[in-house]
Image (spheres, rainbow, N blue to C red):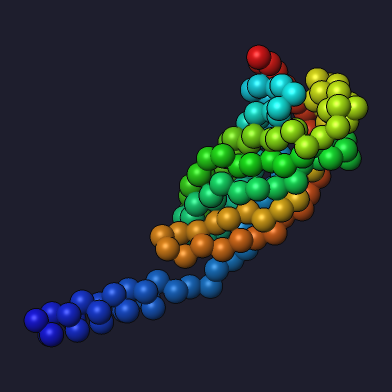
Length: 158
């Protein structure tokens, strides 16, 4: 029994060490588009298409994460990435992130201003926070901060 356990532990250690390779930076190419699904006084639900290049031989997941959201430089509350996204190994693809924001802490004047901005064809969207990524049991947070003028289309408001 000890031989089997030793063999299994040695084999697992060999696999872990042999799979170690230089990890190259994943490239975020920017927001392709924003689709507003639902907007109300409580918040907004949107799908954000993002182009990501993963030059590595290892796929990984992006997990639900909290970020600060701004629209045209105005605080739009917190944004929550609501879905897990698998970033494929050795790929450059557009991934759709589902986000949900919370307007409950905003004053009514700022809220009406944000709704008018969101109804426009373009908006300067900014996100700042930590994105949780990982594979198997290994997880890490990466800080992100960016803003970009993007088209807002396909508002299906409810």
